[in-house]
Length: 140
Image (cartoon, rainbow, N blue to C red; front, side, top):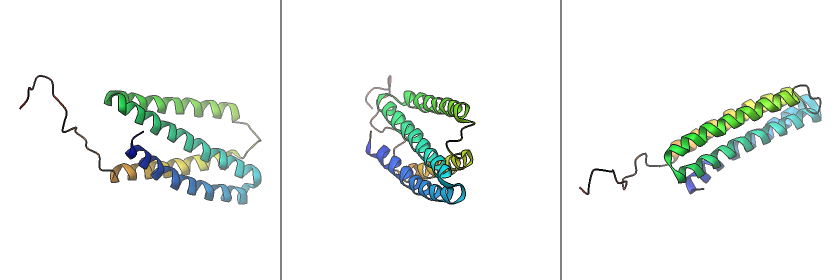
């Protein structure tokens, strides 16, 4: 994992964990222990899902730029499938408060995405490799 990727991961994870802690306290106050458990599971889900995506895309970027897009789309597809499976499996659960879980996931996803975009905008990354060799162009 490159230094830029670690910086982006930290820039998104820390604010999300902060907002998640606030959501956990709010869920506990509004819905009790089951609300706090739902919020905790929501924060954990968002942090794990988005961290896995950043790691997958970072690893794929070392292999090739084309694989980077495939890794991003593939990790997105896996996340959608896992969320669908979770909703189908735990849709009627009484272990935690589903509203606290859902709102925490939505809010943490927005926070993560916003801070991830902010981190990418602040990162000074080249869009073009100045040292790249173009086939058929020779040494000009």
